[in-house]
Length: 235
Image: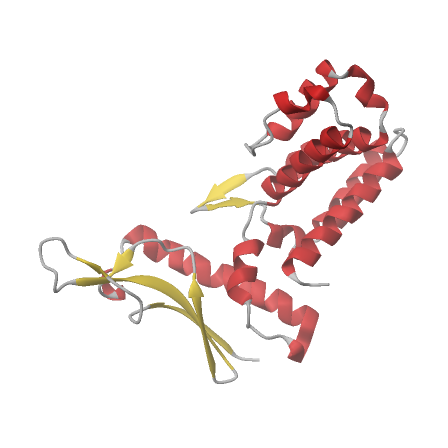
């Protein structure tokens, strides 16, 4: 299945005009995919506008080369799963999801679970917590909740949150975060394509099989993996 991927200027969109010479027009950079003689276009990572791609800045040129290979890896992964049923329709939205930080995505979900747990208990103290996402906040929030509501540590819902936080601490030891261009790796794509679930389960069996909540830990990993696949549209 031959797929052509390249960057183009989206000239049918409203351009930006040069402040000193309105005749000079700058256009946004889009990704173009050609598959089975069909042309698909969607916005990628390049934020700068250009008059001509021959004059792309060095940083953007490197980003574009990276993005083409990254997107090709995603497409090859989907083709491996779907074969001839693969279609790039909707890939722009999928691409945005694939490239999210998997740790950040997990933390957002975990903060939401903590908020839901506290609100379901109708605790007066629930409103003193700030549930807006910040990197690393889920762990801090869990410690704050335990300090202010000591009895909550015995509730299964809260123990599940603690187990999830423990998992991501171990995950980042195995797959340390790193930034490249505008992305933070590992991404959701890395989680799915790299079979990180199986890697982590193998590690956890060797190191933590005897802990009290081990089955709860495995159940959390399975649930998170399911949510990521569902979010991407793989199931």
